[in-house]
Amino acid sequence: MIFDIENILIFLLILPIVSFFYASVGHGGASGYLALMALFSVTPGLMKPTALLLNLFVAAIAFYYYYKEGYFNKKLFLYFAIASIPMSFLGGYIEVDATIYKKVLAVLLIFAVLKMLNVFGPASPAGRKESTKTRDIKLWQGLLVGGVIGFFSGLIGIGGGIILSPIILLLHWGKMKEAAAVSSLFIWVNSAGGLVGQLSSGISLSIESFGLVAIALVGGFFGAYFGSKKMNNQNLRYLLAFVLVLASVKLFYV
Image (cartoon, rainbow, N blue to C red):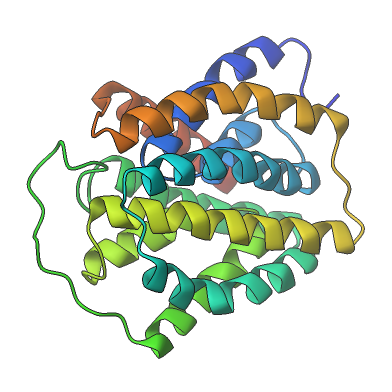
């Protein structure tokens, strides 16, 4: 068993909440899944492939709904994806020391918390009004940003959307919903590349990981639907931010 049997029911109740929130903003939820698994003392070797597997399915649903609503910017996605796909494979292939992995992941989760608390702007336009001005991204900028995030994503076991979305918004390369649509497909290709890299290095997926997919999909389906329709849930944002803070503290000191 990946999880302690005494805690599995609690984990399964929280999992769809995590996927709901992340999918609502166009993300796959890997940083949230990693936080949960950290709280439940899952070993790093199992955390990464499981998080990437869940990411593949939830991010696919998120992309479908945001694409259907017309928010996808193909050019923006391609500029990031060209370099991110091979780099995520490389990152996934590399073994990371468990202690270093935990510390890096703890820092990464702070990015997630900041985004949950709207430090980079509201997760959906239901918050405050965003600027209508955007800038064209240059190819070298997309390659650089995509490559760095892709490598880091494969190394840690995430899709990279939790980092990419704030960058798109901060540099005005796209609006809120465009960032969500691009991030969802970006997450999918990075998760696929990272997972293939992990499997190629000899790491295998647990049968239980596939069972978690169905549960995560329930939350992902509703999250992507409501998120793409401009609906938001403030309470879920704060709850998830709280979980991520707890996980980050645990990773630093355990």
